[in-house]
Image: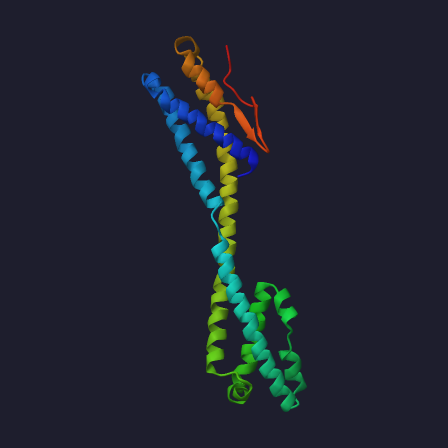
Amino acid sequence: MNRGQINKSRMYFATNMVLEKYSSLTAGFPEFIEAHERFKSKLSAIDENRQVQEADNTGLTLKKTGIRQNIVRQILQFSAALQAYATVTKDLVLKNKATYSNTDLIRAADPVLYDIGHLLLSLATPLRNELQRFFVNQKEYDELVENLNQFKLAIPQKRVATGTSKVSTGNIGQMFETIDLLLKQELDVLMLPFQFTNLNFYQEYKNARLIIGYNGGRSSAVVEEPATP
């Protein structure tokens, strides 16, 4: 949520606390109770969407970063072995295909890095026996295959998590609009009679409906308040 939404959500929850505190006074008004229940359900929906929006995707990022670092190191090892073999056999075509620097790999986008890994794996597979003398054995093949598989799965996971967060951001915005209408068109109006029967309730409700701006200090501004007759 942005700062404005955070400040407004504080107003929502403060308003709900006042309504809960004086619920005995509204018990005889089924329309008021029904509107209050809808208000509470929308607050719960905001909280759920906020949790999704603010979910920490760091774990996914760290996992993918770790796999990526392993793949870069393994590609460099395969590249070194293939270049050494190509130099011994004077195979310039293979040498050109297998030559990658650390900078090339670090700058490569995730799908490109994945493709490079598979390219070197395909170049090295027919030369398994020959590359053993350059320290690429079955263990190195198995590790590269496993890391490439994990890397492929990790890429869309982060995208899905980010996409879910964007959806929740949109949901929160729509929910705020709905709650504003509910407050202004129903609860604020239903509260009007209470200024004549229970001024404390009405005044506390009006105070709760103030939006307090928390931005480098506390300052209040009456952005919304119940209508007065």
